[in-house]
Image (tube, rainbow, N blue to C red; front, side):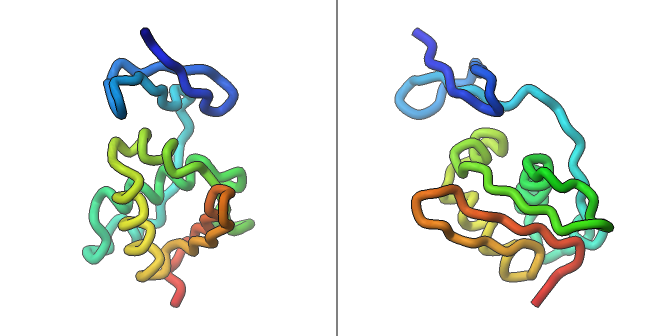
Length: 123
């Protein structure tokens, strides 16, 4: 028996088994994400944290760093599925990216966190 998850308005399934033997879906609509060159070359940031930044950017509505500051608020379970890790790992990488000024995480209680992406590190 397969269960589905609704992501970006579409029911998707993924053959990978996770959590309690249920099959959950991932996004199959592909978009390009931008990442600042300085972030790619920043040796303090782990590779998966850089990938997380790219996933956040792919979820954002505003894509152009030159005109506006991208913001997004994806659910952490969706991001964890896309990155192939746990929610705890997402929290850890959020803290690393926030520590070095690449993102700002605004906790909104029971709603999804608001993530603001920066093109240069902010302190």
